[in-house]
Length: 54
Image 1 (cartoon, rainbow, N blue to C red):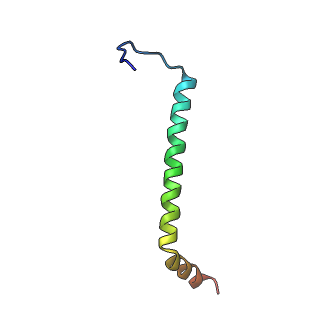
Image 2: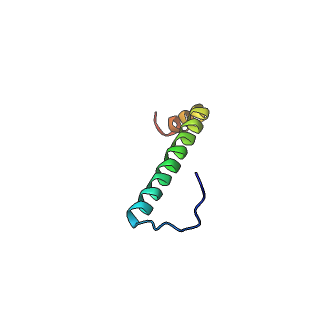
Image 3: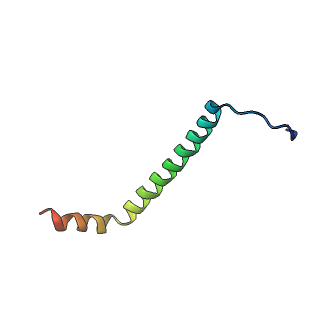
């Protein structure tokens, strides 16, 4: 694919679609990290909840 120096106009729809795609990727990545951290610290979380619920 050759490089073109001509700037291609992007409509707001295309810009929003691209931004939404990036946002979804970041959210999914953050959710995966949170799940992994929750699994790693599951005993700590369980003990913390158990102190408030008998």
